[in-house]
Length: 391
Image 1 (tube, rainbow, N blue to C red):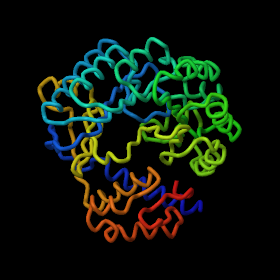
Image 2 (tube, rainbow, N blue to C red):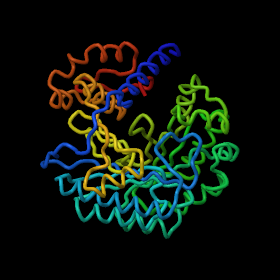
Image 3 (tube, one colour):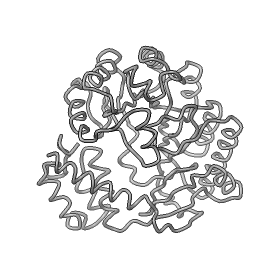
């Protein structure tokens, strides 16, 4: 399957670049009016970090208190603008960066959201050094239901290569902090990375054992190491060359090593308890993103907010959203996106797909046939289900 894996990877990466490059961007400073009969998922981006990890390709900048305070103030103004435009939210995800870099500012932002919308769940990202009782209590009181902790690895040598050991502590210290945070939230998720350059099988298996058998975290997510042109040079210098041909093998090791008590809720996320929600809330096809560097997907159009903090502050303070670019998707791309997001969540309900996009299955007949022939999905009558190879 290795040749097929390579062909599929090349194809998906090509389409991803095509859709997110904004090669022929259409300037935009506004959003479409919302459907007032529904509640949306909201993504907030907080780009500040005290340590810029060499592998991370997300929009992030070095933390400065004055700059961060202004940013949170601007973000709250943009939230009010979205409310005034008619948007209401049910689920909130706050990513970064490190959203908890200033807990009081984040708490004020979340409390504003809860006053404006009937929020049911709030998920935030954090790093191990913020798993302190005073921070966790503040987040819980602000309505946070899920905390996702960026651990990446429990191998001290790998943590040093990622510039995380000095700032966030040894693997033993990280485990101790995870124990202290247990019980504060409905879900405590451990974010891990696999296929790091010097990560061997034993290191990966040790990570799985410590988190699931020893600690028993309620949720663990394994991300493959991702690359971007902007970070590849630094990553090679500090972490070594990445062998992407190992990725499938490492992933299969994870599936084999996870205890039976952990069940997949998506291709990357595994839960110890039923009903646990992960960050990929599959039923929310559309979402609004606020903050510098955030993406939105509304009515078949991708929107990108400006990646310049100064531009973002000026736009929102001037009464405009931080949106700077829009990229309409073709009808076929919209259907492909819907299919892949649902399959990432392990299955595609045929009736739901047809109701959302009439003619869905004949329009995507070649793609679906290809997935079946590869053994990536199996047809169970009312739904297409992702197989182990499909995962």
